Image 1 (tube, helix red, strand yellow):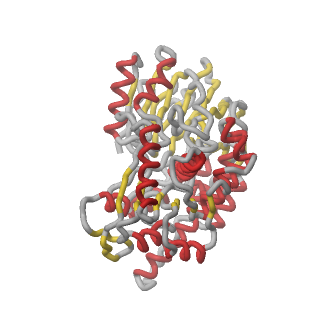
Image 2: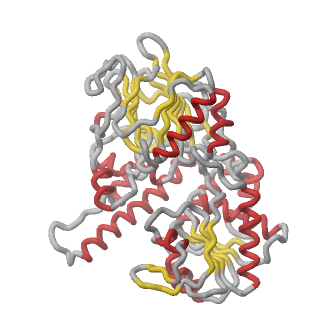
Image 3: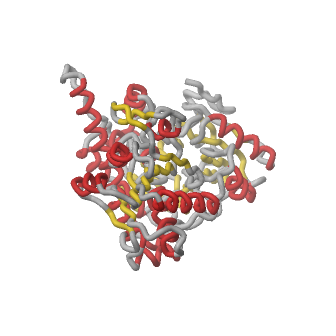
Amino acid sequence: MKTEVLPDADPHDHDPTIPTITFWGAASGVSGSMHLLEYENQAVLLDCGLYQGKREEARKRNSQFPFHPAQLQSCLVSHAHIDHCGNLPTLISQGYRGPIYVTPPTADLLKIMLNDSAKIQEEDAAHINISRNYAEPWVQPLYTFADVDQALRQVVPVPYGKEFEVARDISIRFLEAGHVLGSALVHAKIQARDRVRSMTFTGDLGRRGIPLLKPVSEIPPADLLVCESTYGNRVHVSLSETIDKLYAAVRTAAARGGKILIPAFSLGRCQLIIHFLQQGLQKGLIPKLPIFVDSPLASDVAGVYRAHPNALEAGAGQAVKEGHGLLGGDGVNYVRNFEESVRLSNEPGPFVVIASSGMCDAGRIVTHLKHNVDDPRSMVILVSYQAFGTTGRKLLENKPTVWIQGKEWNKWIEVLHLDGFSGHADREDFRAYLAPLVGKVGMVRLIHGEREQAEALSGTLQEMGFADVGVPYPGDRVEIG
């Protein structure tokens, strides 16, 4: 593991009177966000995400922390996506007993997302044990529902904009990040012995002009800016062009009597797709088809939207208060019952089904695919990035068949990939957000991006006038100020 040498401190024995941050997760990568802020023998954890990758590597990384959880003073979580919060139960099971600070919407979303993750952990362990004919030692889940319950008892909701202390001489406030409901960037102040030092951690930043959520707050100047870089080397296809393609695809499939299958992650992408489909229905841009959201998780997330309409932009918040669109009605129907889901997969079209998972490897979308992948009238619209090796990526391959759950199927369904719905900032968004900070930030470190993306954004920021920009590896540590 590479370690960055600090100018005034040995990387293994630094001066505790100088605040530092160590990048442990989502450094030169996009999974398992986790960063450690330290000052005067105190430690504050920024995010505790689940690393997602090959099973053995993921299990090892998620079950071991490079610090002692019991020695943390506090933990902050930027938002409720699993790669930012999903390893909290493991942190708690290994001894952390302090507060977990989040925004109020994120507090409600954590209950849903972490319990869903615990279910997956338990089912995955059971599947492995069955495949090994229960050979000892049995594989145990990374964490259980009981671990989630304990983690949720330690959650402390804090409103946006309120400054509060997370450790002695360390205070923070949450600001709007515009990525998903409840997402926040973190501005920290450390009352060091010589002066106040500051750090801004962006979490995941949303795009400009995306509906439903409030826009990204003005990013505060700081001695150190820790910024995501997921799409630092690309410009997204315009949202208007992507929406037009979505509507055209729905019209095409509906005209031939087919079903429209849309795999979508239950938090963020699902709500955005529902919003645009509802608009299409209202404006007559797509035929009046039933829209089924076949996801208990998405249904639960809709309940959080209902509870926090003031966390949305004004128009969306008012619609939620009135019970439109995202919460059902106006052509949108939520499917919770498993038997109803199975029945729906056998029903003739045309209609729209939105279901998880977004990469087609699990969840109810798999059943819908198996019933319709050989139907040339139907269409599957992929609205998220499809990682290598996933069923979604295989659907995009120019091959006549596709493997789904261990069986080869004729791939006669039409496949369309729309990659313009991303909830992450692109290169031009970063330019707009960060331009006001030129000359007001001492150091920039880019995380949460594959190295190619991060280094490209590093070059862009240096061209804009940022003097000290770097891309850390896991274990690198820098001084704040």
